Amino acid sequence: MRSAILVAFAAALADVALAQGRPLPAAPPLGAWTPVPELPGMGRSVDTASVGARRRGLLARIGRGVVLIPAAHERELERDFLQDNDFRQSNTFFYFTELETQDAWLLLVGGDAAGTALFLPPRNPSQERWTGMRLGPDSTAVRLTGIARVLPTDSLDQVLSATLSHAPLYVPLDQTTRDEPRLRDLVFAGRDVRNLRPIADSMRLVKDADEIARLRKAIDISVLGHIAAMQAARPGMWEYEIEAALEAGFRRNGADRVGYPSIVGSGPNTTTLHYDVNRRQTKDGDLVVVDAGAEWGQYTADVTRTFPVNGKFTPRQKAIYDLVLATQQAAFEATRPGTSVAQLNRVARDYMRAHSGTLCGDQTCDAYFIHGLSHWLGMDVHDVGDYGTPLQPGMVVTIEPGIYLPQEALGVRIEDDVLVTATGAEWLSAKAPKTTAEIERLMGRR
Ligand SMILES: [Mn+2]
Image (cartoon, rainbow, N blue to C red; front, top):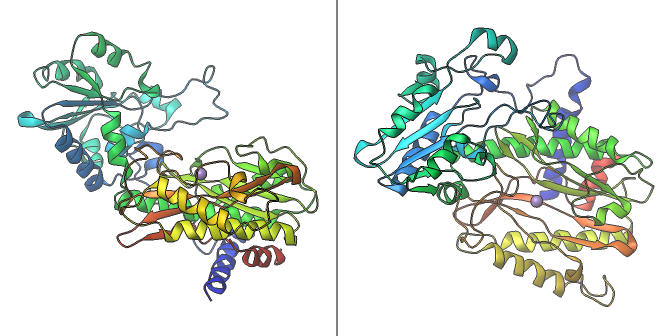
């Protein structure tokens, strides 16, 4: 019954995915939102209550101290290979502001002199002819960001020096800030400078309601892309043609970008875990592993489906597939608050070993499950946070067992995103067809 409902759901979603041929779609794309014209990044609104709560939570953690966080900068055409990269806000800055504006700084002061200030570059109308509208230090920014004190960036050093007595100073020290001259100067000026990242990263482990809503949207969009890829696939297609259908499904439904380079591996390439060249021509009888996630609102999905390019599993492919699927289900059923990623990994491996029979020859199949079962998911596809942390409601993990048999050119990976709830866990990406029957039925309708 459950699978019948899923297939009906998948079929309905597929109809949406196929709607690109219609001149006027019946419904707006999943990723549609109401733009706020004054905000950069085409104006996705800020959940001021959520980011305010995150900033208060951070100040509660650090007590007496000062936090300074830079926004990301525009990339340079000649240096940064823009064909791969559009502007993307730094995750730490986004977490505490949800702003997609460049060259800004966030200052948080804890203790008695508690306060928050956002520093923005002054607006420059002639420059905006090139860059588009920017958020400036004015009442519009105060209204849209939920931060009462918005100042021009050239006043940052003066305001910062007035906080000198409020040591220590927390700044993110990572790849994105390595070349920030202001942070370098602070580190070398003898101030008590500490790395903000471990604290900020631990906060990001448990997602709030706004983050979960963003993840759900990214995942629903990704599901439509995976369905589009299955529907497009035909023996003889090149992997990049399947990738094109997949990513068209993402973008058509409102994805901002891919969360990571899409993996479309067929035949022998199904056994290469991070194959993303996507240049092989598929052959009749191949399996195809598609590991791909759309990003929406700075949050990314991470979903893998494996399907036969001709729409029909061989008995051998189905046997391996069903063991991976049952292993994933066993791990899901063990997912609940208090357990750990290491324990889930053990449950999955034990299950796979116990149910291998002679499927993988002399060895049990877990010998061919050569990667970890789970990772955190959020703004980063392999999201930040300590893997020793016991699961709590609001955490989001992937569950992705696989079996890879290079000698048979046969690899199967099934990956879903799972939200830890008070009593167990919820599948977030289950609308992408997953049983062999669901996949064959969807592909049979092509
Ligand atoms: Mn993954």
